[in-house]
Image (tube, rainbow, N blue to C red; front, side):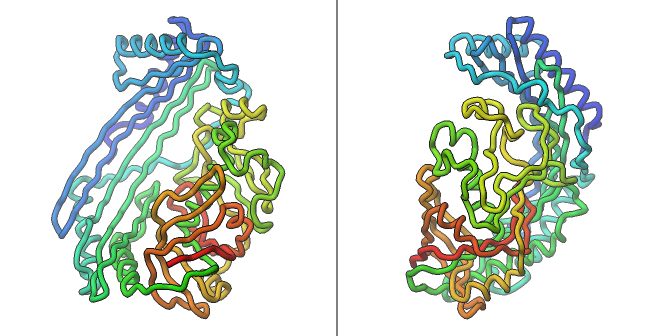
Length: 445
């Protein structure tokens, strides 16, 4: 699926951005920035060996921000006709003229604009039509349903292909475009036996369809994971080592990045406020971002302010080297932007790694967390308490599945208590990490 010429689309959107910026200046804005998104996607969902839905989506939207001195106003529209653009700019200016002045408002400094955008190889269209995606989805679900007689139901298999084009421009003269594709295969099934029923899933997502996991393998992995959750047993409450599986480990790291993000810091709503230069994790922990990785899901040549991105460490050998800052939050803190308006780009845990089996041997007896539920993380205090499910480990070997347990600690203790990390790195998101072994947490049944 790719119904437009990408070069023409980028050119058209850049032209629209330029026209909107000109209109903002004509109406009296002292500065302006515009973000445009144009998305197209096709998703096929099957369930119980039949088509559930076929969805084609096509969306375009404009976010227009204007500044009148230190006042700021923002308005959005999906209509690119001249009359609609004029009305939207007028609405943004009306908002700006009624807001309080904030000396931290304004565009990023002009010398920080990205001038040389790298080719990140993000655009890989998939020519598959709805019939082809349907066949793949049916085959994926069949691989799961036929894997074992104990697979008794399905929440469905989904295959999708999407293309997005983002253009950002401002009155510094910067206009940049990022066009990329995202393709995915997902399957979720339920397994049942006398002990009860359990659900699990598996998925693959990539920029290039050629890099997707085999769809039959995705279905079988979903079935294996659901079967592995059957036969749960209670555990003894106590202090135990906890091994976070890669996806759960990525979420854990995400909490740390949230705690060092500018918005949390200038509001003093983070347990890591005023922690720059201090030890925030175990010595072995380094967290760095790599925005220019080819084909990666989190790659970008510029951030949401148009500032050039680049590789950097946020945490180096456990020490907090820098915060995660866009231009506004940096000004609020009296610092310089780190080129992270909108978040981090391909964050990677850098440390010595071992295989997951070695991590289990290291922990001896404890819990491998494969699923987390609830929102029991307080970034302000650092308190952490969440419902979990996973696998109980005894003598370094998987013993039996567990569910409906609670794991609790503080983020500070957890990050200082990181013992080791696995080589099972998951790159299906913006945080790349393997399993993470935390020395001790309270685990309650």
